[in-house]
Image 1 (cartoon, rainbow, N blue to C red):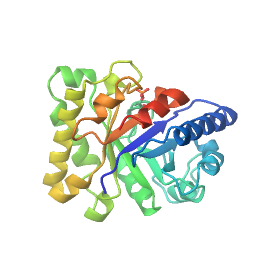
Image 2: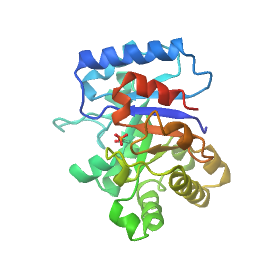
Image 3: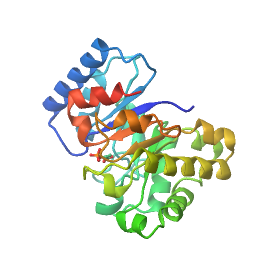
Image 4: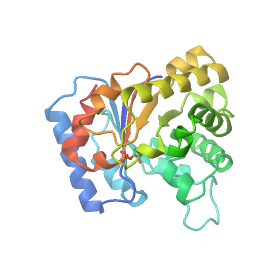
Length: 254
Ligand code: PEP
């Protein structure tokens, strides 16, 4: 089901104490300033904080817990890995997969990501699958070919039922953590293209039901304009998710 979602990716930041304080500030502000919309909020802290942060989220509310990564393996002798089932057992509902930082720094390719997607789905998690082009790709005017290949190789191997669980995040690499946001027109253009590709790979109903988030220097100032685009269903927020006032403003931007 297509939903409005604001997800906060804390990356490798904060201590547990800082994280718990941040969550309590955000949940208090959101409760005090009633958003009046049905936006779903997904908090994605580092692995060691998941259980405690999850316990601090108001139960049965629009707040959900997400992880930033998971293993492609189910269980076994894989030192340092964390499985989808483990994440699910500590309360995670979502998992970010394919983030450009994991593709770049940890050499995660489309094949590995396709395996991670399968593993996450088998554990009952909803993947937030990230795609997006580099500056070179955009300047070479190859954005649409690139996005189309990432979708085909990474995502479109899923069955209709599996695909229905996936949230897509369009995150142009040149906009992540750089302060350079895609304009709302640039975001809308790619989001509409992604939806069209989903319609081709699955069908029009699947495309209409797909939640597509924008990520890349989204903040309290530009979120409203970005979220007003017809194919932008919310945001995956990095830097601004670490500031309670900014993140709350973004949540209220629908
Ligand atoms: C991200 O890393 O997913 C992200 C969007 O980061 P930022 O908002 O800091 O650009």
